[in-house]
Image (cartoon, rainbow, N blue to C red; front, side, top):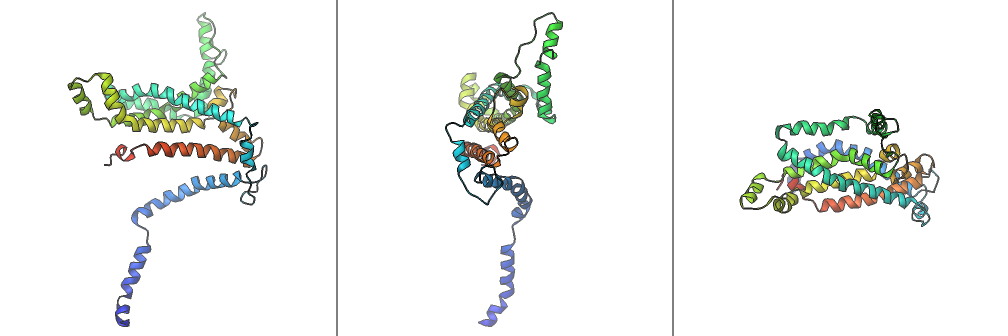
Length: 301
């Protein structure tokens, strides 16, 4: 029996070595996993550690307290007003872009034909320019004696409207900045609608509104929801629009986090606030993704 066991020993060792080796897919995914671990997971762990550190200290992983969260949830703390402003701006941006981007996405899929790639490039091109540069361009356009005001006065008309440093111009800047992030997922969603299905419904006597409500909108909804989710996540963390166009007339939640980390030098409080906002956005994202059929969007059945 011992001889039989020894005779099979090399094969057993080889099988064990083969079992311990990573699969081809795991080896290919290893660089991405390392990148995500170093660039994404490690900063989150550091932020989480600071959130439970002693206030106004750098005792990360050496102390544990809920004092920072108690400060945030104190009724006298006005940080939640900033959070409500951020949510309001983000929701308004999503609502406006859903109305603005849908006709453009429909045109890219159905109407524009051969011009669709060129129009897509026109919407992508601003992303190659720094967001701050583009926003300062709008400041120069709307500022007193700027492009708009100076042109109207040159034409003998009244000066331009005083729109800078108001909540309205902040919302305008967010709509302008995040339009591509709503447009292209929505375009992808509309591309999933079979045109022969639409033609069949039209041949059977269905009207345009009925086709949109019963066929196009439900089938395109995954792409529309992803565009809404992506826009909301980006907009709720927007800072530049409120600073540059809004002149900090409205303090958003991302600005409060920045102040805690810079001027106040209270990293534990800023980390606790970042953890709360991240948990809110993460929970919302997971809930939205649970309602989406990503396999169908990726062409898998």
